[in-house]
Amino acid sequence: MATISVELGMNPQATGSASCTSHGVMVQASVFGPLPLASGMDSNPLAGSLHFTSGGSIRDSPSVDAYVVQAVESVVSSVVVLTDYPQSVFDIHLSTPCAVGSESGMDLSAPAIQAVVCALLDAGVHMRSVPVAMTISQTEGETEGEPPRVTVAIDAVTSRVLYADMCGVVVGEDQQKLMDTAISSCLGAYQSLTQSLSSQGKDVPGVAKEEKEVKGEKGDTAME
Image 1 (spheres, rainbow, N blue to C red):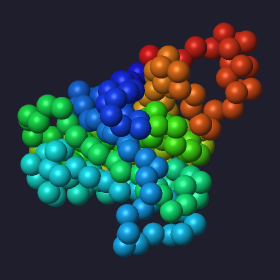
Image 2: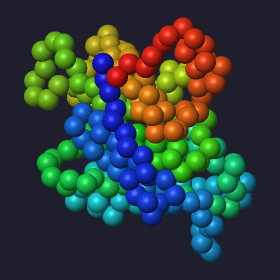
Image 3: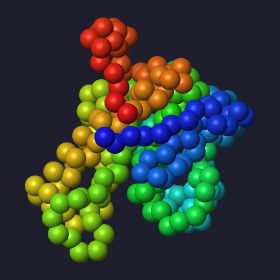
Image 4: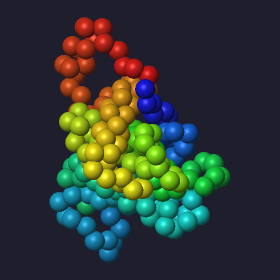
């Protein structure tokens, strides 16, 4: 069963923060806000905005930083209820505590998405749901070089795909099979994620209280 390890509140200076480890890769995220917009900043007067910074702290590679930030922003902007924060901005900082190894943007994007989502949850930011993200490699069939991989982020309540990026040559049925495997892994990891968040006192948006009570009456437990 795929699992995601999350620790909330690792940065006491931030409004909300989280550290996420997925497939052995850790990313930390800190959220500051909502903050008043600085003068001269373009914004929608009816909604808040998200501002991401990494400053090379993810990896000493602007292209990797840009890849990760783009992936995170595409997911987070679809679930944060920005209309609840007009004329405000959330500053979101991403970093890796151990800047060693040669992780690519794809290696980092899934734990980065999860870290930011959980940091926003820790900050009490209004979200429609808590996405879950995983990177999965093709394990069947013969491939030359690195096997094809896909990073997927989904709304685990509706199974709606919020983000997908595939690396490597894979077509037809193999492509669909890889996507299906990734979505299934996300759904499995969601169980461990919600359990981890609940143990740290955070309810998960999108999971009705009545539904959780019914599951409890039936004796269902989250799988780790």
